[in-house]
Length: 206
Image 1 (spheres, rainbow, N blue to C red):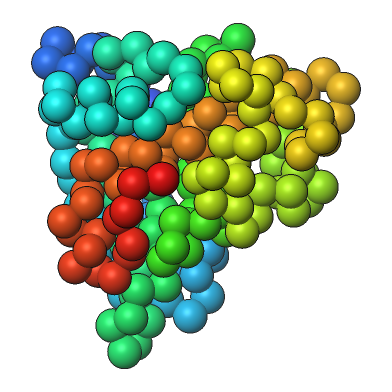
Image 2 (image 1 turned 30 degrees about the horizontal axis):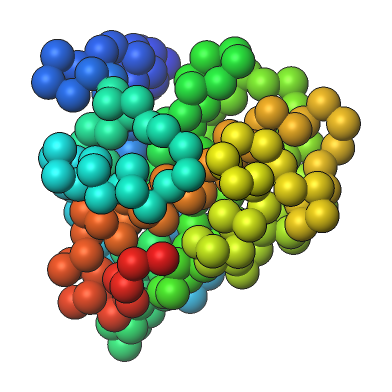
């Protein structure tokens, strides 16, 4: 039964949605994942929002590269709290198209939307381990939107080798990961702006 449930969940992630173009999955096993990201976790809340055309326009304006319409649909944000109800940070999952199919990336940010870590929920890319490595994570940890943006060229399609070093062969995936981080921050600020203000996250435009 468990194997069948996993199969159904995987298939649902891949089935196109007539309403939004492509279905996007949420965080798998959220309790374990959020506890691992925030050891001091007391409780968490999840928020589901659909990205509307006006949101997409605002997101596009904030990015140097183009987002296809079917990249933006329904997204789930997880907010982690300490025992005193203070916000520890958020977890947001994005699905990106890669050379080897869909890649699911779980992003963890602090309360100022700076990167804590990223993990692949799903990826068939052979350079996955290089991008998940400590060497790569150390370079993006603590970075905000502008600092991540500087890791790409003006068009946002190539790496800035002076600010981000990656192992040979991992360049393409690294670009997609940095683009994903920028999209995730922009989506979070745009779609959950009022909610984030209530939770204590600065939602000023990057």
